[in-house]
Length: 252
Length: 282
Image 1 (cartoon, rainbow over the protein chains, first blue to last red):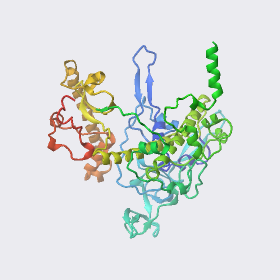
Image 2 (cartoon, rainbow over the protein chains, first blue to last red):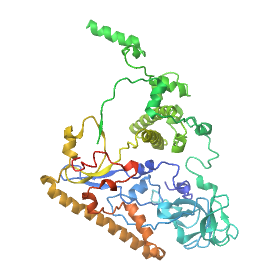
Image 3 (cartoon, helix red, strand yellow):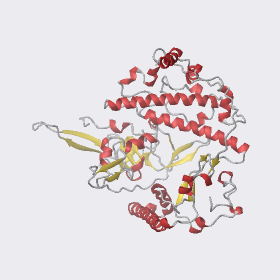
Image 4 (spheres, chains in turn cyan, yellow):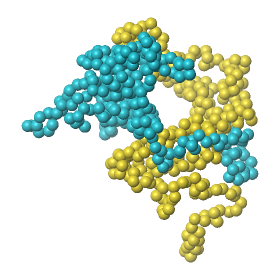
């Protein structure tokens, strides 16, 4: 849906989808298989969605993403160089190094790791004209953010200098793994927006529902190891007795 | 007719006490509804068939609040009886969600928070994983083996290599007619020699395509990012993993029988005791 306001809500919660099970995403990503020529006059042609899914600004289970990945149409081959480590989290302050808004600083709003993309809030936007129905009506303009490649266009900011810097992972005296700028040695803390998802904005602010187990009972330990298999232990608890001799089985 | 009616009336009059129909020689088993009553905190009043449906408040909502799946570490703390009870809670929840999915499909409406089904499936897999771990520990103490049915490569009756999954049968292999037709390998049969030679060419072609794909992707990456030119091995490993490329096994490994001294000493990979000597016949 296109609106007059800035199109940020579609990407606000795109934080890697770590809260959602991967099976659900994979299942919603592809519709399966496309069959053509089902009239049985000619053999059917089968197209698979499975190969080389191209990740775009739209979420993979939306219809726009499935239209762009339609296997019946030619697809552009995109090869993404792999990064050894990922330093960017949602809510980080970054500076844009190239493009129209070079030199400006902003907060990260969305991340797409599969393409090494980062969306900065309100910067590096494009205007698109969306014409409304009717001959005499004026068209509407929409602002949408363009993606930025990680190592090329974007750099993290040192909180002491407020200038761009290179970052490394190092360990503190306590043993914690922390981001550190190479130039000054200042620690860059991970922002609280990094753990935000569709369900909650902060883990501490989440209240469990009726069907959720409370945290007291999660940690309770009730396991006592015994020299029995799981089935034998359950039979003992429920008083099930088997006197019939077991038949011989062969495993091959 | 009178005899049939009398039996029908007898069944109706029993109601929920179906235990009277069962003879007394069978062992006593707790029925399901008594198990769930102990830990079902919600008070079920009225029609118990409504447990197949969600709360009435959630029928018209867009999102239903729910938590995350159980992790393996949290399930390892629980006793086997607790896991047994958890399994049935999850089973009932799964049935409820699947009925709701069908209803929304029939009305052409989107189901609110469809990811609940995937989360319930994940916890059920984790529960089975914990049960498997505990049984493996018991098996290692009793016998020295894990008794895990690991798929392995072997020749089938067509003369082709297959990832074979061992299973439990009531009959030995030399009496199992269907198994012999499918899996009993003596040598490549005459009716599949032509096909097996062509199949090898096909597999070689597919493997060669993947190698070219990996080389092409490395070339493209080093074009635009010359920093990766020094570390090509890292790129090669990354793309081989991504495209699912496995290097071909050497031919002599497949044909040669391993000597008993060369067998792996790891317990999990130990072969069946009979298979060491009668590998060709198996």
